[in-house]
Image (cartoon, rainbow, N blue to C red; front, side, top):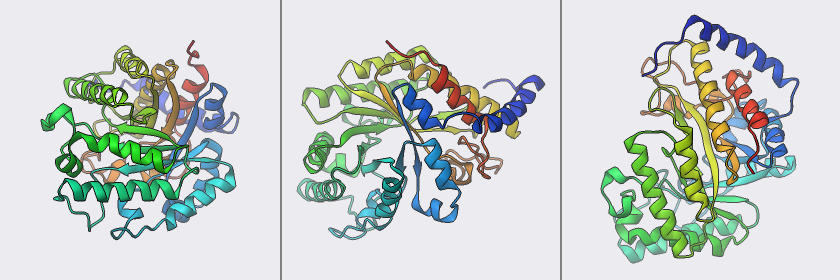
Amino acid sequence: MMPPLPRRALLAGGLAGVLARRAVAEESGLAALAAARGVTLGSMVCEYQLRETPALWPLLRREAGFIVPGLELKWAATEPDPGRFDFTDAEALLARAKEAGMAAHGHALVWHEALPPWFDAKLDAAAMRQVLHRHVSGVAGHFAGRLAVWDVVNEPVAPHERQPRGLRDTPFLRAMGPDYIPLSLEWAAEADPAARLRINEFDLELRNRYQQDRREAMLELLNTLVRRRAPLHALGIQAHLRLREASWDAALLRRFIRDVASLGLEVHITELDIIDRLAPADPAARDAEAAAMLRDFLSAVLAEPSVTTVALWGLTDRYAWASDNSFARRRDGLPSRAHPYDADLRPKPDRAAIAAALRDTPRPG
């Protein structure tokens, strides 16, 4: 665990907050800073958040070049009954984006969580294949040509579960074996040939044995898919960065990104935020640590030419998922400070750190 921050760092954190608020009024939005270096930057958002907090939409339009619907495209939302699709909230969110001239990314077609109540985890191979094919084709086909990217398979590796090839023990794997992954990619490509297709995974960025095992399992999966010529374009590294939970090694992460790129794949940062459950209670101290980690992380990944996309997993602490998550929430009951803006939509040092990394990181090549 890191030692407590000295008083100088705490004061610096407070000053950074003042400077961050001043800087927002003076510089371009984050999406414009990213575009200037050839990277697209966007943010996750949910339709209910925009209904509850109307001021969030103009902030999102300023800072993000694309949106990622956080809930609206998951299985439980899109197929509430077998074979009956409902895209009401997704369509509302995409209509906002279209009017604003913003792109949209799809999240997520195949995931072992957020399944509808009717889903039967004990289906045999033939029945599971039918259900999975209907869902992937139905959802991807409905939005064909309208989503730039799809997270086709979300969080497929978990070496500690001791399944073949380090894959996660899911209903899909149990019924269909590893083939459910390339088949899902093939069905998505058939339904929406224009979309870029992605495998999305968490805990790939820090230096410990657990995450090293996950990196190795992911590389094995990607190699298998590339050899099979599956329609895969990118790996999504979620990057829920954990303060004080594992050592940070920029060189190690960059080697992993290069290994992925050597397969002909792009690397996307897909769910960038901070897990601060072990960080100090003092907001200024937490913000100072978060800002430093965000800048170090982005400075490392943006130096790699295969990193073409960055998505923040939300803009404001008002909707921080970590505050409600049994693993990620703080034990002292304080709300998570996971995002670039606080619960009152005021910029934090996180925002200034992201902007600085986008602006100052030397461009690769």
